[in-house]
Length: 532
Image (cartoon, rainbow, N blue to C red; front, top):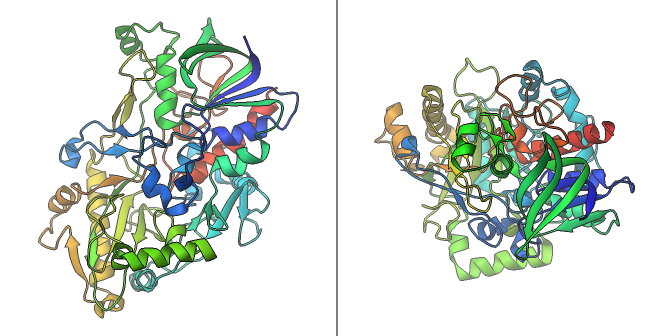
C-alpha cells in the first residue's frame, strides 16, 4: 500500500493550488486525486469554449438540481468541472474578489485570520496581474489576470447609462470596494484560459514527490477511531487504498466535499444510518448552508447599434471571429462569460452593493445555447450577490458514484424576492430612462413591461433564471454548532482531515467566487505547512 504525507481529493480550483504549494518541499510526498480526466479537450483552453465544456459529460459532471418551487417548479442544469482544473477549467473566467466587508464579516463571526487585511496578501500572492503590481495586485504569481480583448459600443453605452443613474465608472473592482461599472478582468494569458491546472499544476507536475491520478473516483476516507488514516478510490475498475501520514485534504468543491464526507460517515447520523453507512461522527451541518448567485436574464432589443447576435449567426461572421482569434488572439473567442460588470445597491439601506450586473452583447432563449436571436439585442443579467436563501446537498446512496441531491431553495425568502424585483427594475431604469439609450429605441423583450408588480416580475423572470455557478458554504467554517470546519479548516472532532475549497465559506462573497476559492487554498497551504 502506498503511503503519502498529504492526499488531496480533487484537482480543481483549490486542489491544484495545494498540490503546488505542498509539494514545494521535496520531503513531502503528495498525492493529488481527480475523478475527472486530463484537461486535453481543446475547448477548455479557448476562453469562449465554456459553451462547449458546460453540459458536456467529457468535462462537466452534469448535475441537476431538485425542482425549485420558487423557480416555477424548474430543475436546472448545475455544471461542475470534471477535469484537471475543476470548475476553473470550464467557468466564465471572470476575476472578482468581492467586498472587503465580506471577509471582515467572516472574521467578526469568530474566524480568526480571515478578515480582508488577512486575505489580501494571498490574493496578491496568487496573481500575475497584466497591469502590474501595486498595493492591491501582484505579478509573478501562477494565476494570470488580464484585461479583456474585446470592447463593443453597446457595452460602453451601458456603462455611460449606468453612470447617468449614479453607478460610477471605475477601473478596478478588486480593491475591496466594488461599487461601480467597468469591464471584467479575466483569468487568461495571451488570450488563452489560465485555469489552476494551467497556472499551478502544469509547471510542477513532474516533481518526483508529486503523484497525480486522474479518473480516480474516491469511495471514502477511512478512519481509525476519529483519525483519517487512508483513502479508498476506484481506478480502472479496481479499488485502491492508500495511506496518509499527515493529512487528507478534501478539495472536491461545494457539491463533492460534503458528499464525500457523508459517504465516509461524517454527516447527519439518521441519513447515514438509513443508507447503511457506519457513523464516524454526527454533524447535521454537513451539506447545509448551500448558497449561490441566481442570475435573472432580461433581454433588450436595440436599434441603430450592433450586438453580436447577427455576427455569430452568420457564416462569414464566424469565419472572421475565428481568424481574429487564430492570428491575433483577440475578439469574440477570447470572451469570458460576460464582458461588462456592475455593482450597485438594490436600495439605499444596504451598507455595500448587493446587486451585480453581467452584461453580455448577445441574447438567447437558452443559456449556453447556440441559437442566438436573429435581431440586435443584449442581456444585462442581474444577480443578488448576498442571498438569504439556503439550500443543501444530501447523500442519495452509500455509493459515492451516485449523484447527491442538490436542493437550492432559490428565492425562498422575502428579501431575496424583493431584491430580485429591485434588480430588474434598476436595469429597466438604466436602459429605458437614461438619455444614453434613447437613441437606440430599447424594447424590453423579456420579461416585458406588462409585468410591473414585484410578484409578477419575479414569477416571469424565474422562467429564465439560471445559476452563475457559485455554490459555496456546504462545509461551513466556524467555531460554533452550525459549522463543519474550524477557522484552520480542520473538520471538527476529526484528526488529520481538512476541507479546502469554496464549501468552507460561511457567507458567499459579493461577486464571482473563483478568485476567493484560489485565495482560500493559498492561505490553507500556509496553515497546513505551519502545522507540521
